[in-house]
Length: 175
Image (cartoon, rainbow, N blue to C red; front, side, top):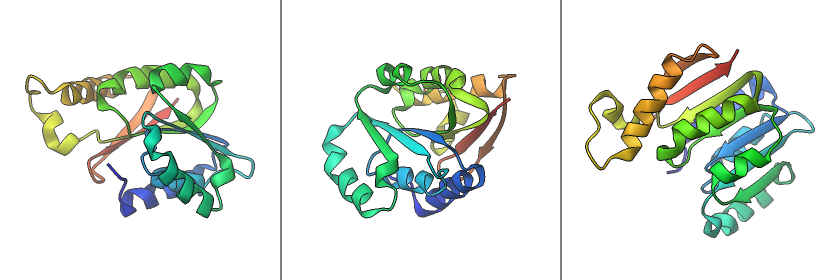
């Protein structure tokens, strides 16, 4: 569930290249990817994270407190589908690494929230190659990822590329 070092450096590089003012991360876990994304924040930038598991708060507290970015991170705990609409639009960068069954809904919710030229990074879009085969019954994650990949591939609002980094990261740029 943790982003690896290569993925972390990739997130940091994209953030550094884009110098985002507002970043949204869906799925915080221990906070590693949040810290990588925070490395490139604009001077007065803010990173907002959402995680459904508040039991991870002490782990995140420790890492955020020890980093130079802790004061730039605003955390929310709960259902992301309920929390996302409470934010004003205007995100420069979004990283999605949460419950796969809701990826299609997140995508549609996030497109209006992204600024033109904004980036949406979606983790696990290769899903160990399972997205290339017919989803087995009882596998809603694979079906949701297949649906998302199909939606993105035909979405005229975006430029997109799927990178075979770890379990697949799809990079979507809003036109």
